[in-house]
Image (cartoon, rainbow, N blue to C red; front, side, top):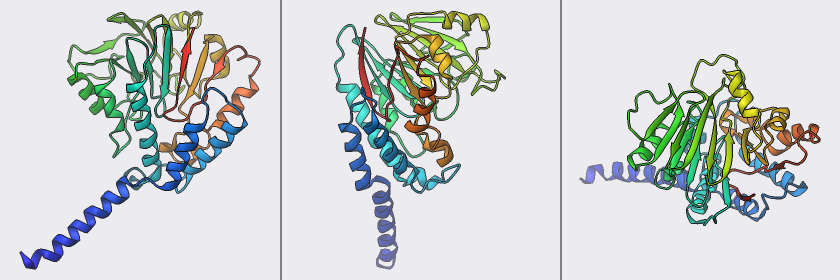
Length: 328
């Protein structure tokens, strides 16, 4: 054994170094997290914009223009910081009581979000990035999972398999989870509504990112739970069935719109939500170029151009892992 001692020492040091770089959260990430926690998500002012720039600068540091490398996910500060934020949000989701007549909303990453009422926890588009497992904690916590489409930043098969194993319900547009025959997996046709213990969920097929092709399962989902109406857009823009589009845009009862920031403000105006929450913010997983067009400054500047059209609607610009409470 003595002749292998140096080899064992080398392997031990290699494992220790990997663990250090994988788990270590840098001081500037901890400091930024404290700044976000001390900021009020209900007040979008100059101080929030300035914090948004610090947030953007942190995520942009060392990030390539387009596709991040495997090292960004393995030991990069971006993944570590977002893990910190999502872990914190999941603890809040677990421990925050919600009274009757109220709803609490949290953002995760990209279009990922969670709503919690007195009786239900519903998750939209939760997905872990490579070498992260933080979102999979939701498989033990939530009641219903909704998946808008199959992009990896929206659809996490391992998370959903774990959720189904734990007796949770999963809802998606038909054609997505074709290999899952569990009675807890619910493929919906466009326009179809499912009632899960009093929670009504309707799917509306859309294109993907405005491509007008409708070649893959992609949908908006309308959810009615405990007296609230929530609409989640995924990455869709145009409806395949224009009569369904007219139904959705003809509604006047949408409380919370969880909306992709690429959706035009005129569409938000026509949907008439009480509150809209722009998502797909600070998307670093597509590189610095995408990050710079999905931060507070760039997205808010678009909304400012249509301020009159959006009058009377409460806009919630949230950092990853932030939440707010809403009551009618």
